[in-house]
Length: 447
Image (cartoon, rainbow, N blue to C red; front, side, top):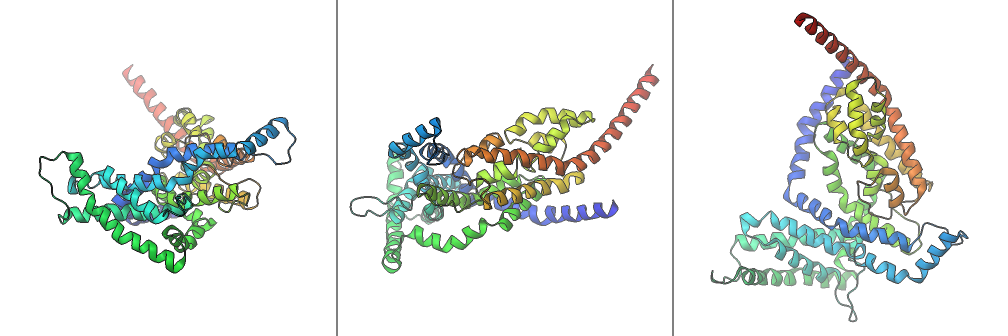
């Protein structure tokens, strides 16, 4: 036990002294926060758009003879254009929303220090993104780069525009108007120079890339990031993300928020590629997306603690039984702070191994199931609070094999947690017995 305790202390000191400070600085960095908040702001559009995608491509074989399925398939084929229009205006142009939302949230960081108007930051970034991603061609605006392909460009353009506005403000470069001018008119004139700078910098660059490489800036950036996107979809990358997130959680830092914030750009890029492949009736290329993390890896919340909660419900320890009853409903909706802090799991050496091991085993099993085509792959953005079996099936286009897999993964997690749960239960039972005996002795003394 002393050797195990020393190893735990060594790991904990490493996380506390090296990993946590770095993660804390990254999570509080203004550009990272703006990107994270920007993705969150755009999420409602993507959830609604993804929901409609399932109606356009029903989860049935094209040659099915089942009455309900046949009717749905025929209706979807007949009204495909009408059904997909809301999808095209949400998920199909998600980079527009992401670009404006990131610029707005980054602009809020400079309201006090540089008097930037977040709304004007969003408007400028939107114009700049359209300038480089959707130049007018034959009287129409192409939308190919406004979906998942344009996410990296949207991030870079939003940061560039806001930082350029901050630079101009810091050096008093702009059109100065008298103080008597209404604020809205003043803000509009403040945007003239930034618009001119954007046109003189980004537009020539876009024209150069078009003439030299016959591609738009988003396509060029995607070709640069393609190896990174592919690497982020591999099993080692998934396991590394799970490990880092849960090491941070164990040290008391919300690791899931940090890791998911950094991975959102990859998740949404992968999702866009899967949706494009679905529309073309091609094999879905990617596995690792937010729904994969939420509904297959961390079932019931970080640490895949749903199985542990069900163990608690049958515990002989009054403390654990109470935590189980308190946590079971939130756990169904993937909220597990009650069990993490009520047990507690944070900084509890008994649960260190299963807290890391359970989600990593889930990741391997779910990744293998998708890789072997035992279940489908993610095509939808789903609210993370959806119950895991329902959310998994929904994310995969109502593939109910996914729901079965989630139940099996929850059982696997419970099996992993069980021996450690029994060790901790034994410790608590001894403590509860001592406390009961002490209380009895004190009552006898009073009597």
